[in-house]
Length: 105
Image: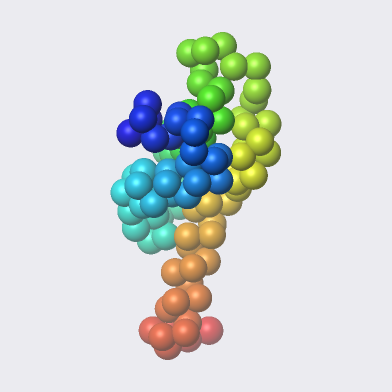
């Protein structure tokens, strides 16, 4: 998947980001909205995993001696940081629970 889809330069970057979200992150971040608060090491691991996918899309892999830091890669792809991605997932779950009246404020 990485070689044939995510790093495929014939696809637009926006399409590769969407494919990563639907094919990779949907499985890797399954039920992330219900995860407890992550410890430093756990958040570092999640951050590194997400950034590996984003760096593949941006063709800025670490093993190719990329000169870009994480924030520059995120800006290049116009995507949120991994921490913000988890917050968005939690907010979506929260709004779903409130709308369905499962949890009252």
